[in-house]
Length: 492
Image (cartoon, rainbow, N blue to C red; front, top):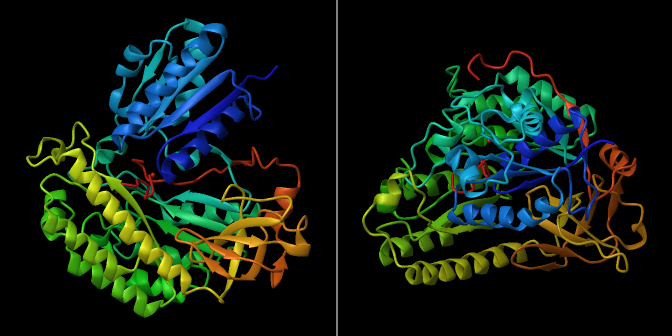
């Protein structure tokens, strides 16, 4: 009987995509995904994040809860990978000796062999490489969606933000060649995928390895030439590298969505300087202004850190000022947490928890006031929705379903008489009737419904609980020395 597995993912989009690869590797090795509700799969893999302090607590808490389960099921194996594994290494086995395998960000492809070796030797296997073993996109992938896919354009990061541990865990930036990326995108489209998100720790520095600072804009335009590709997104750009040619490519390439996730982190120039973010609020706002001039309908989202060491009340007010001027459609907000190994961890001026919490609460209130107002502007507008699984709610009695508009907003819509006909991956057009701070509602019959190949694939036998498609995508000619939203790291 085939051994079963389950993958638990923490963190950013890069980790989500890495988990698809982990699933693909295990299935290629003969494992099958454990059915929903199975609390004793043969293998449990934790794909971890190290960006925030509670990531450690969540992992070790979950490992502790699994210990009595494993005591009763001796054949169960537990593996820990991802950024926290790269950071803690053998410390994981010391703290949780019932863990069987620890592997890093650079050697995902070793997991099946490490599991087998741990079983054979009846001892923990810890393997952490310091540089990339195999470029991740050459690995088999069990895609979690029939209609949308992640495509890594680079891995690693060359920035030195003082709060971020990711560069030391993911390594220096390594870029894939454009032809390899476009081949993967075409393969996804051929399988029915309608939407692709280009992933990198810093997507708009793409091309640094082969000396073309305009490579990312060219890549966006090239995606526009792929028949059947209806939506292109990317995450995350860095303001210091954001160039006008990328704005032009977004505005002039029909399938590139008018949505932009661009981390701010702070509106204070002093704090940005301490963060080593190499741009200032004036430049950031200038980019926002150019994007809105080229694409008035653009939805702009961001990341913001509150309570960075030394942040004053005046610094925080400057952040609120930039938030009000930028009119974000959404923001991922974080309270600064000290990460060992980062320069910020040893800086003077670490703020009391109560100060950080109070500022955080005010930021949330300001962001939600703005996002609600921005969403209200769309009431009465017609939106195109790519119907999704797991994006909200579906009520069998009311026929309500969910999906994403082209600008990335979450839309809950009434399927009306089309309930039962609309599948995940289909496209509907509907009219917004109500706006909330974090989503739009569309009551009443959809204006149109288009069945798609992605919807056909979803209907062809995948359970909504465990969607996916096994895609082994050979990526020929990756860089010789071969991501984390967002870019893939939410604190990027």
